[in-house]
Image 1 (spheres, rainbow, N blue to C red):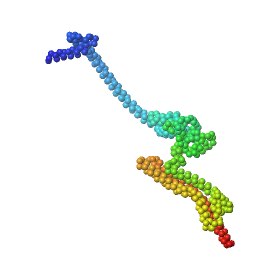
Image 2: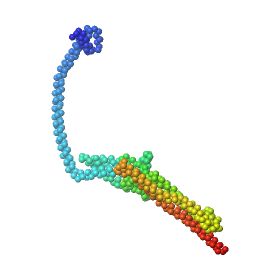
Image 3: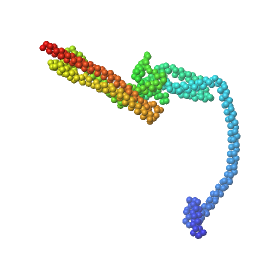
Image 4: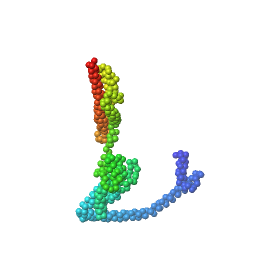
Length: 462
């Protein structure tokens, strides 16, 4: 090894040794000082190691003593565990014997407590859904505890608990035949909570302020129905709210809300009308227009019939305010011309009055024919919507097809509803106008005959 390499190794060892020197000592300025510090560090380490060895030798005897002590404690615990296991087995046997003895001594009482447990469980389920639970909510907790207690073979119901169960059943039966008023918090459809006087009709209905309410057992809340049933039921609820004594007719729901829920889902006349869609709106609009025209025409033709009847009784004084008077005016203005010309003049006058008398009759007839065709169009549109729903969602849920079926049926009903009265009113209006035209033709023919007879008499005289 070269001299430079040896010097480097010695320097490195010196640095390592210097690292173990206490921090209080000063750093070596020369190699001699560094060597001295390394020697001092080695001496200090030797002393420290020697002290550790001496301490370990002193504790060696104590460690052996602790080991023996631990072994003795373990043996004691093992013996105690064996003893406790023996006691545990004996207690299990005693528990089994006592349980069998309890079952044997219970005898028929066991069956009684089983029935009691079933009765308490059934009563809890019935009471939770009952309207009386609004007034007596605390009984649910008692019935739950009683059912749980009876489910354990180690506990029996006390006489007081049995009497309490009987009392709750009796009270439920008694309350089912009462009409009771009491204050309660009612949630409106807008979400407001109002303190109101609630009327409970047995276990069937609850009303307040003339409106039907519903009870939600899950939340224990009283809700005002967002949609009330038919007016006759609401009117009876208002009578019950205002009544203080006597008898009031009220619709009672024996299913405790299920029938009422189905009843309020029934579509009203307005809702059924809107189910017809655009086709239904057009059909009803045409029907309304036709009815208005028919009424106006019928009234106008009736007034003309009265005027014509009056004019028939006074043929010598024609009035231009009625069709017969205008025909008579043509006759008096041309009575001295020849028969052929007079007949043509009167026929022209009757033809001139005919359009006025038959105006809008064709429109009424067209509406009567178009209305059922529109209903058929709506039926086709509704069936298309239904088949589209079947294509997308299948036939599993009928509610998805209800919209198309409603459109199909409602438009058909609207078309027939419009067409039937339109046929009737068209018949009336057309019959009235035809009657007036026949009167004009009859009078015109009579006037021609009268003029012809007069001319024949004049020719015979000459």
